[in-house]
Each structure stands twice: as C-alpha cells, then as structure tokens.
Amino acid sequence: MFKFFNRLGPGIVFAAMAIGVSHLVQSTRAGAEYGLSLLAVVVLASLLKYPLFRFAVQYSAITGKSLLGVYQQTGPFAKWVLIFSVLLDMFVSTAAVALLTAGVIKYVLGLSMANIWVVLLVFISLCGLLIASGYGLFEKFSKVMVFVFTFLCLVTVAIIIPDGFKAPVSLFPNIEMTSGFLLFLVAMAGWMPNPPSASFFLSAWSAHKHSPTNCSKMAKQNVKNILFDINTGYAITIFIAICFVAIGAILIYSKGAVIGQQSPMMFAKYLIELFTSTIGAWVFPIIGTTAIVVMVSTQFALMDGSPRMLSRVFTKDEGSKHLYITFLMMQIVGVILIIHFFASSFKSFIDFATSVSFMTAPFIAIINHKAMLSSDIPLDHRPSKLLQIWSVIGVISMFLAAGYFIYSKILM
Image 1 (cartoon, rainbow, N blue to C red):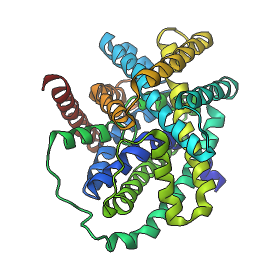
Image 2 (spheres, rainbow, N blue to C red):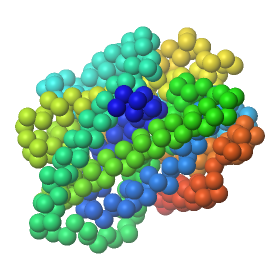
Image 3 (cartoon, rainbow, N blue to C red):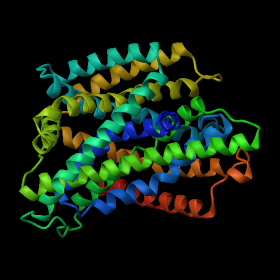
C-alpha cells in the first residue's frame, strides 16, 4: 500500500484540483438540470483533454524541465498565450475557486462572516504554508483527501442507485439545442476536468518530483511511474465527475428541485446535505472536513502555480523568491477586488470563469503536442500515432468550443 501511494504524485494533485469548481459545481449542475443526458459529454470532455495534460507531465518528467522553456522558445505568441492563461488563473479562476471555498468553510464551520473576509483569512493562511513548506506537504494532504472523497462519492452513488431506477421522471430527458444550453456545455467543458492552463502547474510539479536519468532501464521505469500516476489521477477525476452528475440527476433533477442562483454558502449547504441525507448525519464531519481540504487544495495549487510561473517567465533562473512573493501579493489584492466588485452572481461568475478557459485552450494543446514531438524527447518516449490522433481531435474540439463562445458572446 505504501509503495502504491509513493508512486503517486502530480497526478493526484491534479485530481485534487479537479474536485473543485468543475466537479462540485458544474458536474452537479449538469445532472441537476439535464439528468443523465450529459453524462457522456462530461466523460468525452475529460477524455479529449487527456493528451494535453499527459504530454505536460511526460515532457517534464523525461527532460527534467518545465514547459516554460518550450513556450519561451516557440516564440512571442506562445509566450503570451502562457502569460494570458496564467493571469486568468491568477485572478479570475482563483476568485471563482475562492468564492466556493469560502462558502464551504462558512457552512461547515457555521461562520457568519462575509465571503471576502473568509477569502482573506484563507489567503493569509495559505501564504504562510506556501512560504514555509511548499509542494511536499500539499502533495501528502492531497493523496489522503482525494481517496477519502472518492470513497464517500462511491458510497453515496451506491446508496442512491436504487432511487434512480424508481425516479418518477426519465433521467435521460430530451434536450433542445438552444444557445443557453450550448453555452452551458462550453462552461462545463472549460474546466472539465481542469482548465488547460493547469498543464503548466503539472509540468512544474512533475519536473520537481522526477529527475531524468541516462540509464535506459531506469528511464523506462520512471516513465512507467509517471504514466501510472497521471492515469490514476485522471481516472479518479472522471469517476468523481460521473458521481456528481449522478448525484445531481437522482437527488435533484428526479425530484424536480432547482439549484438556482444561490450564494456560495447556500450551494455548499445544498451539496453537503446531499451526502448527509443519503449516508447519514454522522458523515457531516467527514464530508465537511474533506470538502474544505479539497477546495483549499485547489486554492493552494492556484496560489502556488500562478505566481511561481510568472516569476519564472520574467527571470532567467528558476524564479526569484522576491518576485514570486510580489506576484502572490498582487494575486491576493486582485482576487479581493474581483470578488468585491464583480462576483455578485455566483453561478454566472462561475460560468464566466470556466468559459474563458477555452480562449487559450487549443493553443496550449497544440504547443504541448509539439513539445512531445520535439528533439528534446527520445524517439522511444514519443507518443504513439493513436495518441497523436487523439490529441489532434482534442485540439479541433477546443477550437470549435472557443469559436462558439466568441461568436455567441461577442459577435451575436
């Protein structure tokens, strides 16, 4: 068992990030509003992005370098794609995650403080943790909480499956292809299972955890461990997404209930009560603590990854600590201002944050694809033809989604 856990690393951190907004909010809404009709879409959206994330981890583990060098060497356009994506994560994505994190903390701990003060307290606490311990402690927490959360989801779905068969309405309703529905698909897929820019953080963590070796036998074993790690983490993210679609469909849609434009705290209350009403009130401390930790894990990743990546963009070495702290402070101030002025509608703000991910997604996928076919990667470690075709199909789908989002929001 310990050997199994030791083989896991960035892939499980990836899963911890995914459990945030994309799973707790968007997957649940997919089930609550459209039953099980979007189940295949959720799985497909995750699978289409798999090569993008796999290539990021694989490239860094083989070369010992993060993707930053690839983006800088590709040219100014690629560099600005990276900067724009990281800035989106640094401010808009972090604000969206911070709102939900605040809502979960307020409900579980019974706090009556304003969201902005809870966010500020979380930021201050995480700043101390980031500066004092960094990635290592974060990875250990993530491993435990991801598996606890996965187990609770499995138990909940196992209990409610009989209710699904007895539902008074069909759990596979016919759906009209309206502009509102298509925009929801874009919003849901934008962070399913994670925003594409998370590949930058995965790359940095992978380079940190794995070191390249000249011994062919050791190198092949290292790649096997890498692929086992990312595949395990990715499978967990898809499984949990399926669970939340099922929970939304059986416990909300089949009963005619509506989530509505709820506050972050009310959404957290609604969500956690789905577990306690199904498993029992005794599970509240467990699901509450786990929900807080997985949300804080997502927050931690965004607060560590965005400033660290920007500090490396603007310095020639591995990144200035002073510049990292400066960007971290800028992130906190920016997120507080966004929450104060723009985040009055929780659901609409979440949709906006997840949708804009598609603005840069296809370009990130293309550059990550090219990185794995570059001279940096030995021929025996390059992706198979099947995986390359898979990656190209993913790129095309991301261009289509980005095009529709731009058309509907700007040109219509």
